[in-house]
Length: 140
Image (cartoon, rainbow, N blue to C red; front, side, top):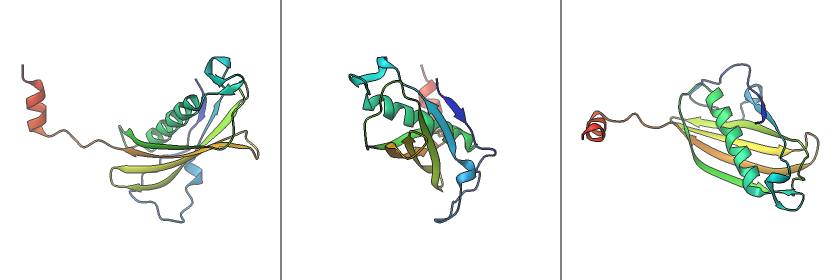
């Protein structure tokens, strides 16, 4: 499991302005993948990178204090291979919040200037189940 560094305080505003600085709410995660996570010899499988990003996005979403939410969209751009055994830094930032939707962006780096991947995600807070739906689902 990665080591996650959570924001100091939740971002609870309903909207985030286009040029507003939300960096004090960024989440940082340190991940390390061994040889059991390789696709090609010595290179971390892209699916493992996507999983680490999605997990990090989820931690960032929950740190916002908005309750339950689910990944609705995840788009990963792979920039260069991640060597197995090398720790990577994943940084997640809030792009915007609109109603039930939370838009996030992230990057995977070596902690310096090497960027291995970047990604965007949409998390959605589910609608409350209607009473008729609850009755129908509890019927024998």
